[in-house]
Length: 133
Image 1 (tube, rainbow, N blue to C red):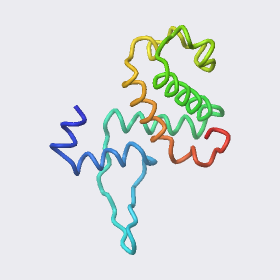
Image 2: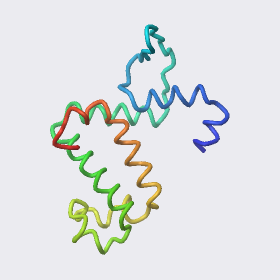
Image 3: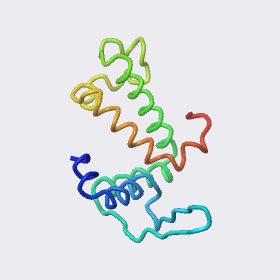
Image 4: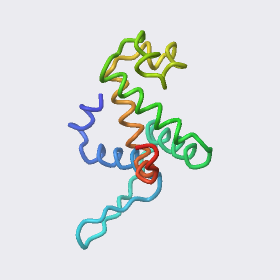
């Protein structure tokens, strides 16, 4: 679906990507000496979810840490194993989530895409936290 959106509406896709992965405010893109204002702001489920996740991570202690650690562990699990029997020994962070729908019912590709999207959404905060990288 997103591939079709990229092909059919490349300009709108760029706006959506910016709205999703940057703070949910008025955006500026600086190129050399020019500043362009991007007037569009997407109000899709994805961008509203990104805004909600950012708000949680900004205002609730531990939520950024939990989200980042979980995403990194799920990425590692999805790329290296995808065998739930190996979670307790090789992917201990995920031990409490072996029955979670995200771990058991989704494909590795979906988990990787989701975790990468979440880390992109949190890219404004993750570089400031060396303990999470």
